[in-house]
Amino acid sequence: MGDAMLAISNLNKRFDTAAGHVQALYNVDLQVQEGEFVTVIGPSGCGKSTLLRIVAGLDSGYTGSVTLEGVQIGGPGIDKGFIFQEHRLFPWLTVEKNIASDLPLGNKEVRQKVDELIELVKLKGFEKSYPRELSGGMAQRVAIARALLRNPKILLLDEPFGALDAFTRAHMQTVLLDIWRTNQTTMIFVTHDIDEAVFLGNRVVILEPRPGKIRNIIPIDLPYPRKKTTTSFQELRLKVLNQFEKVDELELTDGAGI
Amino acid sequence: MTNQAVVVRGSSRPGKAATIGLGMILPASVLILWQTLGHYGIISELLFPTPYTIAESFITLAIAGDLWTNFRISAARALLGFLLGGGLGLLLGIVVGLFRRSEKLLDPSIQMIRMIPSLAVIPLFILWFGIGEESKVLLIAKGAFFPIYINTFMGIRNVDNKLFEVARVLGFSRMKQIIRLVLPAAVPNIMLGVRLSLGLSWLGLVVAELIASSSGIGYMISDARQFADTPVVFVGIIIFAIAGLLSDSVVRLIERRLLRWKDSYQG
Image: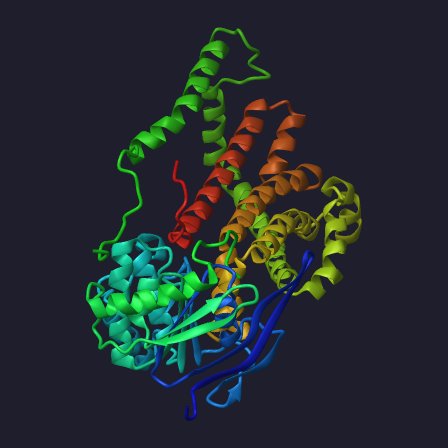
């Protein structure tokens, strides 16, 4: 491949616990092109969250190289937007102030961009609401708008819709694809839902646990918008599913995902 | 779909008038009982002057202007002491809460001073600062300092680490982290500290004025005690109670406004 926007090579990460070492990531190599939508899927404990947190600069202590536009990732920053599984909004700020966060809403440019983003994530009329007044899906959309306001080079999403019900989740997937088409932001989306991975991604990266490493990368060359009921979609879904059956890891292991 | 705000609030809450009425039942019954018992001479008029006698004495003092003068002096002392002690408590609480090094440096000494009873230092305060305003204000400040200090410190240390991660991802500067994350998150604790400190300021005021003073409500009480003028003692006590209640209500009002975002059990 050519010059990838994000290049991960020979990435290893080990957690030292009282019980011994856990190899969270083992020799991971992955290139992500600009504007690409990559989904990462795997059972609990396969290191998918760890991978994302390393790219975000939230976790360190790894070996190997992770570069964004050729520059080694140092720490977290606004060039790498991050959406957590929980919305993590500031409870004392209204929707619009949460989106602005540390930027002044009084600034004309900020104000205009915030208004545009509220439109984009379809939250018009809720600018002055507090997080406690929002549903889970709405709160997660605020979190997405908050990340997008900073014009990140790459948006990292760590099971962002995991806590939502099936209907809200399907709606949020459509909203996210809309945003991706409009803004052409590069995205890495971690999930444990096969349908979600195939529905969203240009490529699906399949991780396997203990040690966490890439089992396979499956390109999804279906045109957007995709329909989950078509046979071509189902074929690809089965292809991904088969990867799991090979490693016999379909049933999810207990414990929090690392 | 999801485009609907979820309004979190019960519907069967008692009205404002009903709430106030509920709070009045107990004091009103006590007053009626008290007046009746005193009226028929069942309890001593000297030790327990009837509410009516107390009200009379209140009006006499109010007309003479003593009440207002003394109250103004007392309120100014309490407020000044509260601002001094509370302000310092807030400042040190923030510094100690934010920086582990300043915690190691300051907190042990502060905790030590906290354990010294106010009554024990009064003689020293009087020797150092005389019986003027300084000793009284400083005594009140000493009491007001600790609740705000401890609660601010705790509030800062209790900020959710997950929100710190958000601040890092959003690239907050250290300054913004304090102003936009740490302080707002600590406001519930800080307000609790403010309420406790304000209460202690009134208590400290009474101690200071009873022991060495020639003006203020506390002085009025101790002066009346010497002449066995119990109604005036009661007037003083009632004024302390009302002033304390009013100042607490003001803080609670501010607290409610500041904490509108909180989603907690409303009773």
